[in-house]
Length: 322
Image (cartoon, rainbow, N blue to C red; front, side, top):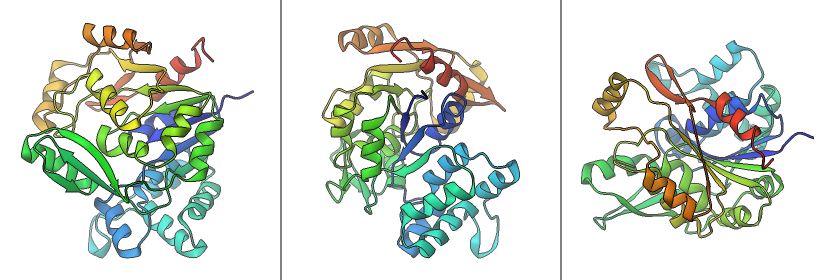
């Protein structure tokens, strides 16, 4: 029997993992954070009063089995005119939301039209706004502003919350978590893609109660402003702080080193640095009774560092715990 997998996250991070998992199972649920307010998604959200379509679109493309031309169409971004910087896939989701009267029905129709493996599920159907409180005691509202303010203030994020305080979990998201054999968290922006899922009422309890093996896929690089100088342990502790329960069974971390030139490029461009497992990390996870799996889980493509979904999928499905 095929293993059932739920993947929690947002942004571009989990779409890479979804592509790799398709080779191992067709029973995949992508549970996607819904707080994006930047770029084309933010414009459609404000003007049409819909949930942000960008992150779910990326997951639909990752799980789609249609031809390359159709996937390219969903990804296409206009370069000029009144639609400049707007994305075709986002517009299609907005149109289907208007036709069918709800965002979740629009995603079902998109999944059918583009022959999607599994399901793409918004973590909540409520309108939400992310709130960050910094160590400097300043606060900012809005997902797209958080990393910018963190960098500008040269401070760390102390706590994350939402408006409304406890948005309701999508019942389909809760069911996906509870019924899965494996739940994967990440990779993705720690405070603006991963942690927002834990701020939705009912998700933490589902992660606590699920019989699934819960795996956190660690980021390969820190992010400008948001996680500057963060270690693997720092990432993990931020998740624990916002999730109430210690439900993670395993951490998958990359140990493949890119060239110094690539790391220098990332640092010069985004003040981003690689995350590798330290002896302190090993001791910490041993004390937490969390399995730590290290491996060559990234690929260098066109000079960029990306997670390798195929290698991560293979590692997960080789696990003796399945």
